[in-house]
Picture 1 (cartoon, rainbow, N blue to C red):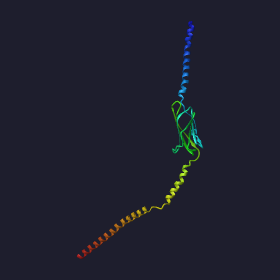
Picture 2: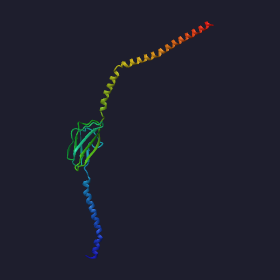
Picture 3: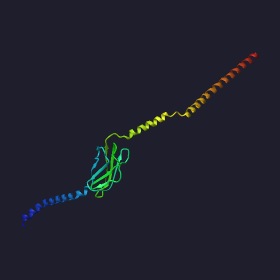
Picture 4: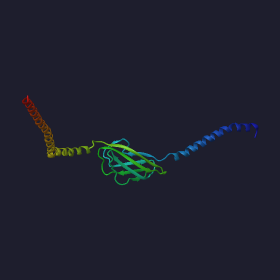
Length: 202
């Protein structure tokens, strides 16, 4: 090998090193992607913030199979509507409900363990369209109770106690006035007798 050939090899060696570094970095990036990408929720039925009707089950689809699935469907008043345990079929998890959900706001709360051992949890709000009915059913009962209470005769005890209080207060005011009149009359008679006795002495 001549001096020129050795010099050419030395000149091209930095490029080769740079290319090797880029290749190694690219390979590390490719190997790191599967390890960094954890399983996650892919979709749900009902979807987040969806307005639906006729819901009698909920379905969650993940990017991989899961285990230890827990799904709770909760209404705005805190009532839960799920029935039994969720069923897993591949990447899908289905939770049956006690019946078709009535109109109102609901939340799907879920927690599963992914295929790589990491927990996945979250909440999915949705709404069943229509007007809520529980408030309307309670109104007649309240009106009936109020009508029954208004139809009851007033209690006699408060009136009697009020009459006793009035009589005692009136008696208390009449007795001192009478006593003052009698005392005033006696004082007047005494003064009159005193003046008459002085006139007789003169």
